[in-house]
Length: 315
Image (cartoon, rainbow, N blue to C red):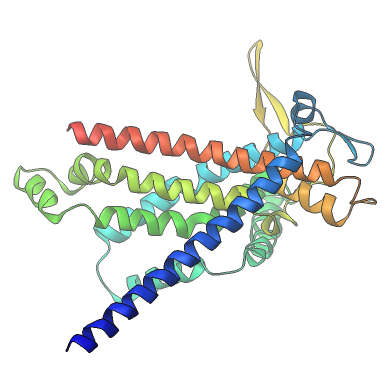
């Protein structure tokens, strides 16, 4: 009996050791990777690098247009994906019955998360540009305005890419709300929508924001889906147009123009540049900026999540 107990303890000790060793090994790799990028990239970071445009075949200048394009695409992606994903999850969890059809939809959503990102790029090219864009041009008689690669279609394709993340995380957040809270709301005479709006969603909001954080991280770092959807090697102008109301004009993101994208910019410098060695410092600088940008976007969402959790704790 004592020998058997020692064998069990030894197996547990060995398992725990393997888990800890794997964890510290992965953390070490992450630290080395981030440290290398930070040490090599911090030397080229400056205000000129952040706001200037690339020059001399990308061997000089900055990455201002690429930063602007990345932020614009990410914001539009979140705008498309989050409302659609949240309302879809609400319908699936609160209204849809547990039928064979609903189970097929849930399984399809889970499987979409494993589809390679380049497939979404081909889907965006075929569906958004060649089908929706071309037909919009024919109906509206706008020439070749929508039927070409543009910021709008790149954002929509990335939204489709991150949609399963938003839906699954929202479903988990909705399921985490105790059934007794719903029953108490119904017992007080509230309707189903009033219960969802005033009881379920406030408690599920931190989980929904977690899905938004994951979506931002995934979308901002993707390169393959936007290869065919409007990301340009170099653009002298930002994708901006003036929205004029009377005498007042406000600069707005123009979703029908092409754009520069930070991840695509790094990819081009590393693979298509005439002298990749000469652009290596800019590659490290651009990578560091992309990581910091993604980190800042995530921090913003984390702050909102923390505030909602704190507010929820006071209720």
